Image (cartoon, rainbow, N blue to C red; front, side, top):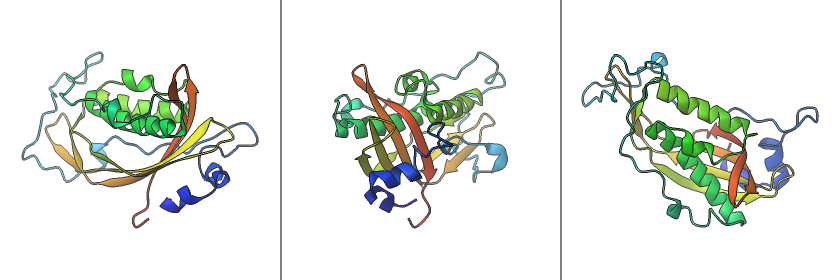
Length: 217
């Protein structure tokens, strides 16, 4: 998916993104990519030099036990100006904030704040929550994750109050596993679409689609 998607008409966005219909039964989405990390499928270039134990010990994954939250500050709403305003630009900033919170939740080891940013009907959001919880259960220790905006636009929508298209780059970061290895994660670009609705004084994500952007796009 390329930047040209966001120069297309709103109807083209609907066809390619959130609101494709399945026999008239309602919106369907492509599941978001796994934003976590499965060490058994890759050595991740794991270099034990400078490795962190991620707070992991033999009992770190015991049921009911959680790791201590790292001292990584949450995304600052001041960096997303107008996200609390019922405007088109406010919807864009609120969606950007949501994406930032997805990655921060991996680092923080908690989904409580993220859960407040989407509607109960957002199946794609539930998938992202599941990924965070898997990361927490496996006691992965994430380093800070830099996110750079490449493009952010808004569109008319037939299914939501407004749709937001957002291309962003996730910078290099690392994930430490309880065995003491540090896995370096390369920079990656993602294309996302969000269906947004204003509810009780704030924007909520009603549905989301995230795909990796092809190299060279």
